[in-house]
Length: 296
Image 1 (cartoon, one colour):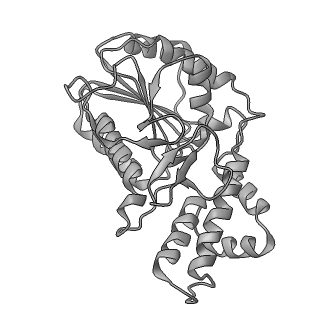
Image 2 (cartoon, helix red, strand yellow):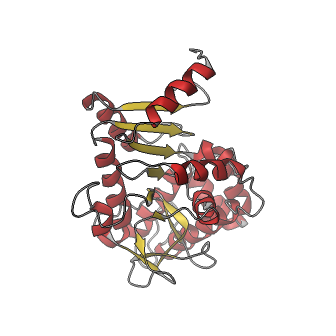
Image 3 (spheres, one colour):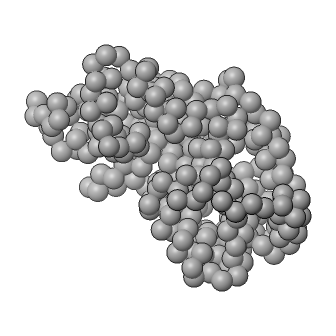
C-alpha cells in the first residue's frame, strides 16, 4: 500500500479547499458512521439478524445467502411484487414478504439509533460545512440511513436542504433538487448546504399513496423508506432515489469539482460507474478518497 506524509497531504488539500470557485462534493459511506460508534455494514447485518424473531430470522437468512443486507432487501421486495394471494416463492407469500421487509427495516432503525453515538466527528464536519464559503453550494452525498449528519447540522444551526419541503410530513420536491447550481432554477440559496441521502433514511416513511415523506424523527411504525426499490412498474416507490442518484451524476460532472470520498467500500457497482466515469471525463476535477484499506 502507498504511504503518504499526512502534513503534506492536509496542507495540499487545504489549499484546494481554499478556492471559492471550486465545486465541493463530499460522499460518505458506512465507514464514516463507524467513526461515531455506529455499526458498519457487516455488523449492521449481524445486528438485524439478531433482532428478528425466529420465523423472520430463518426467512431472512435464506435471502442473505450470497447477498448483503441491501441485496436481501431487494430480493424480498421483488418477491412481494411477483407473488399474490397465497402464492409462494422461496417460502414467502406476498404478505409474508412485506411483513419481513417491515421487520428488517424496524431492526435497521433500532440498530442505527444515535442516542449513544459519539457525535464529535460529525460536529467537526458540520462546523467545516458552516464555514464553507463557495460560489456553488457544498453538496453532501451519503448512502447511510442514520441521522448523524442532520443532527450535527441542526445543533450547529447550519442551513441545509435535503430535497424535502415541509415541517410535519415533508414532501419530496423534485424541481428544487434538479435545479442546476448557479442557474435561474437554483431556487435554494447557495449558502444552504445540500444533503442528499441516496439510499433513504430512518426518518423517511411511506404514505398510503406510496409517496415518500420525511418526518422529524426515526420511523416508529411501518417500514422506513431505506434502500431504493427496483420495482419498475411502481414508479412512485423510486422517485426520490432516482432523482438523487441523477443529482449525484450531474454534480460529479460539474467543472472543477473536488470530490472527497470517506468511509465508502466501493461495493455499489452503480455508484462506482458514476464516480469512475466522472473521473475519466472531467480532467479539471479531482477525487480524494479516504480509505481504510486498499481501494478494490
